[in-house]
Length: 463
Picture (cartoon, rainbow, N blue to C red):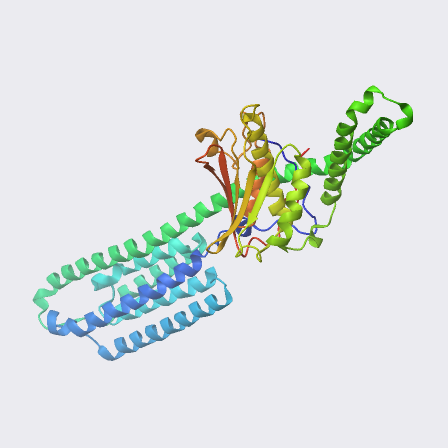
C-alpha cells in the first residue's frame, strides 16, 4: 500500500489519558462494588426479617425482638444512606474510595456481631458468616484494609465467646438438630453470597483488565504513529529546499521550451510535461504549507462545501485518474473535521487509484473512482469504490491494524495512519469486495465525531 507520513502532534495538545485514548469508560469497579453491597444488604435484611418472623413458630426459638428490630432498622437506615451515596456518585460521575468501602464493611461486620450477641454469640451456627464478609472485602479492598477487617472480625468473634445472650429454646433436646439446620442454612447463604457477589465482581474486574489491555494496545499503535509524526516533521523541514530547486529548474526549462526565439529545440517537445511538473511541484509546496498550518485554524466545514475543493486538489495529484463525488442531501449539512477526513480519504483514494491503474491496459479502461457520502442512521458513511485488483482476503484483516506489505509494492503505512485517524474520530475503516470487481472502502464516522478534534495526524503528506 502507498506510504503516508503525518506531521508531529501539536505540543500544546498533550496526548489523552489511557481511558480517553481507548474510547472506553474508566474502570468503575468500586462503584459496582458499592452497588453490589447495597443490594446484598437488602437481601440479608429480608432474610433476617423472615427468620425473625418464623424462628419461634417453626423452630421454637424465642428471640429478643426489640433489640433485633432496632438493629434491623439501623441497617435499613444505613442502606438508605448508601442508596443516596450511589445517586450522589452517579450525578457527579465519581467513584467511592477504599475508605468508603471500608466503612461499609465495618458497618456490616458490626451489625452481624450485634445480632450474634443477642442470638447465642459464638454458639450461633451463623457465626461463620464472618467469612463471606471477609471474602467480599478481599475482592474489593487492598490487602492492608482486609487485614484490618480480619483483625476486627477476629476480635468480635473472640468477644462473642465470652459474652452473649443465650438462645431460649422451647425444647432444649432439639438443640443439636437446630444447630445442624442452622449450619446448613449458613452454608447455603454463604455459598449464594460468594457465587453472586464475588463471582460477578471478579467478572467485572476481568472486563476492566480486558479494557485496559485494549487501551494499552491502542496506545502502542499511537506511539508508532507519533514516531512517524516525528519523521514527518524532519521530512517537511528538509524537503522544502529540494522542491524549491526543482521548481526553479523546471521553470527555466519550461521558459526555454516556450521561447519562440530559440526556434524548434528538442526540449520543446517536453513543454506539456514541464508544465505538469511545475503544477505538481506547486502542489507539493501547498501540501507542505498545509502541514505547517496550526490545526486550530482548520475549523469543521459542511460536507457539501468541502468535498468539491477536496476532489479538485486530489485530481491535481492524479491527473491520469478520474474521480466522481456524490453527496446525499441529508449528508450535505453535516460538518466534518476536514483535516483528518481529508487525510483518510487521500490515503484511501491514492491506493484505489494505484490499484485501478495497475489493472488498466489498452483494451480495458476502468470506470472513474467514486466517492459517495451519505447518512446511515447516526453515522456519516463515506464510501470509495474502485475497479482495481482488489484485496486478498488474508491481507484484508490486517489492513489498518499494522503496516503490511501489498502486492503493489506498498507497505501499508498509509492505511495504518488512516485507520488510526478514523479511530480517533470514533469511526472505523472497512474494506469490502466490489461485486463489479475491485474494492469498496467504507469510512463510518459518528455524526458527533466527524467534526471532532484530535491531537494526532492532523494532515497527511504523501510524496
